Length: 111
Image (cartoon, rainbow, N blue to C red; front, top):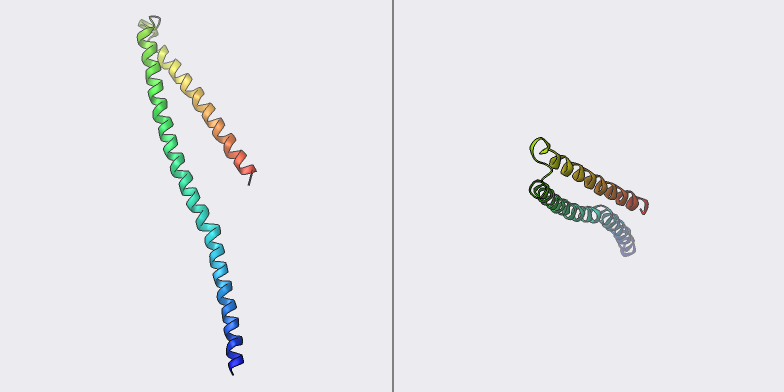
């Protein structure tokens, strides 16, 4: 009778070990990457906000420079500094987007 109990305990022990192994594997493969993703999203969002604020300040300062320090853009040509700043901002945005996509696709290739 004792031998049967030890045999059953061994079987239940193995089942509990298998259950624990599966639980730990699922935890490792799902929760850990989600925690890392959360950190990437937080720091990426903060970085994007900081870059955006900096870009706004740089654009405004360059617009102010064009309006105040140049005498070319007075009268009928007062809209040209706005166009210049718009074009520069568009080019910078396109460059940053291209760099971002290049890094995203490079990181996907490494997986």
